[in-house]
Amino acid sequence: MARNLCDIRLLLVAAAAAFIFIQIRLFSTQSEYADRMAAAVSETVFPRIECVESESRCTSQMRLLIDQISMQQEKIVSLEEANKLQDEERAQLKNLVRDLERKGLQSIVSKEKEPVAAVVIMACNRPDYLQRTIESILKYQSAVASKFPLFVSQDGTNPDVKSKALSYSQLTYMQHLDFEPVQTERPGELIAYYKIARHYKWALDELFIKNNFGRVIILEDDMEIAPDFFDYFEATATLLDKDKTIMAVSSWNDNGQVQFVHDPRALYRSDFFPGLGWMLSKSIWDELSPKWPKAYWDDWVRLKEVHKDRQFIRPEICRTYNFGEHGSSMGQFFKQYLEPIKLNDVHVDWKSMDLAYLMEDKYLSYFAKIVSDAKPAYGADAVLKAFNIDGDVRIQYNDQADFERIARQFGVFEEWKDGIPRTAYKGVVVFRHQTHRRIFLLGPDSPRLLGIEHV
Image: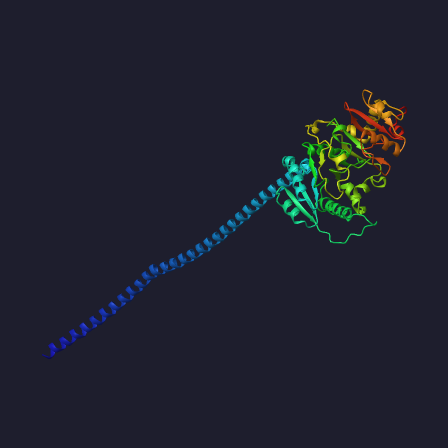
């Protein structure tokens, strides 16, 4: 019984030892397995972690690269826009250069397109006269408006004149307001002549100096014009520019009454200023303006000290007609000299005409020849003899009184100004008579001035 108990104890000890050994082995195996698992985990998990970190770095680098590319693209877009702007600016500059070149070329070529002359109607207080004048001018000016811009210059405040002028869109209105009292130089003088002189100076200063026109044609508010009025002045403008011995060009002939004219193409030089529709240049006005007279401006221009031996171009047949019976001159000479004036009604192709014969270097010999070719008539009855001579006739007068006597017999103007008869050139007055032949009245010095030895 005791042995069996001992055996059991031994078995128990052996079993315990075996159990302990198995536990130790199991623990060892578990430790080894744990180490292997740790190693396996280490081999599998940590590379994944490194890969994740690497991927994060790659993503970060990729984003950085994308940002850099985006920035570069923005710079490229900005440069492209800048380049586009530069291209547009270059195109604009090219267009500007072309425009400037075209304008420069036009400024050279377009001198022909510049106005030939401004046309100004001098008005005061006659609205009905003004309307008649404007209507006459517009009848022919509309076709050449760019060459001859039209102005009306009113002296004073007459409301009807102002309203009438402003009713025409084809013209520019100017108004001269001068309230300074007029002091006449001699008792009994009309102040109207002083006001007229002031108005003329103001209006011509406005057109020549303020508006810088190269030429101006002056008309009055009681004039009608001929159909070739503008062609005539355009053709003679060249003469005015080239020949500095020509002071002005006029459309008027004092001896232009119907019985004394014939040839619509005939033009003359004259030492006597005709006025009544005349054109002058800016250079002449620059000379006259500073010394413009207080009154009687037209007679002042006729003084030798003013015109200084320069001449005026005039037609044989007038290109203006003065219908102003009522005005500041009180109708002086109207019935005898103004009403019978012939206004040209024949078309003249002035553009095709050679007017070089009117230049100073040619005209003297041209005029001398036609005077010397005329047949002389002598004696106290020279006028009577002239009626019986075929062809052109020349009659010599001795002095002013003798001229007035002869002129009175023919019916032409007798008046002189500062030693010069109306219409005269070198003392010679020419007009037509009867069968359209020319009559030449020669002064005592005319043959010498013309270089004619025998008359």
